[in-house]
Length: 278
Image (cartoon, rainbow, N blue to C red; front, side, top):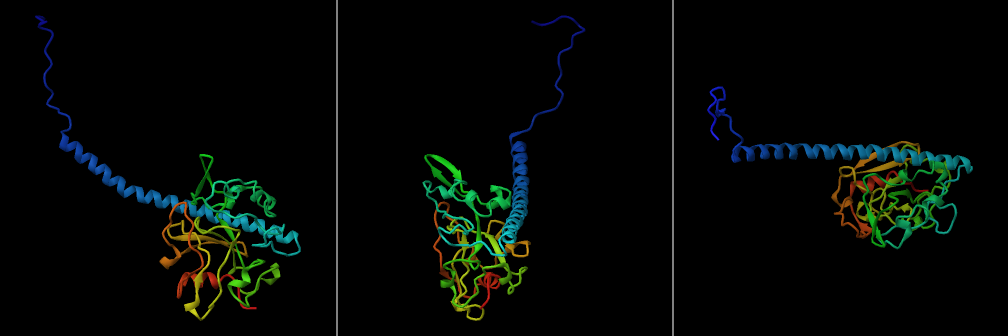
């Protein structure tokens, strides 16, 4: 109905208009570009934070190990000795959901001789960047361990991976390399980890690089780097240099182990920090 009241004026156009479709698409494109620039930085920050947490976990595990050693007349726990109560952790991981060692803390970890020394803390047994899982009865479950022990610490089978090298059975044996240069724990790749020991084969050390090999594969979760803990208590993140140390990860599939890797500088780095000739 048209009004006849002269005090009421009809609305006048303001001259302002909304975005055109072209302008809206330009804004969306700019936001997408900014997001693409920001997201890698955020991802890198997350990876760095996980690396810091990984270092802290390694130090805590080293402290637990040292407390155990101090309480046992300097005798070190065994890195591999199935059925022996001195084995630092029993069981073997794989991708079988029926294998409780993969997902049940009470299967192996809470029975470890180090369990009480690490404050009954399950978190330090696994790198925060390890997202490996298994499926049990339709439920996806995170695996419970990524950490492994240097096999040259009191293993029953490591001498087959390098004849004439020292197997450390007590703290007093760790002389060369020195405690600050001898690693004890590392994070192992999810497709490599099985039992509790990490074998660094010593064949060809130090001056026959054609004989070098990778028996087990270290993790590379932290921008192509992996966490190590040393006997003196400090932890490091080691950046890998050779692509052969970081094969493509295929989720849920085991990796072929014990492969030749001649002249691999990463292999030499690990060998040089694992043990020495007797």
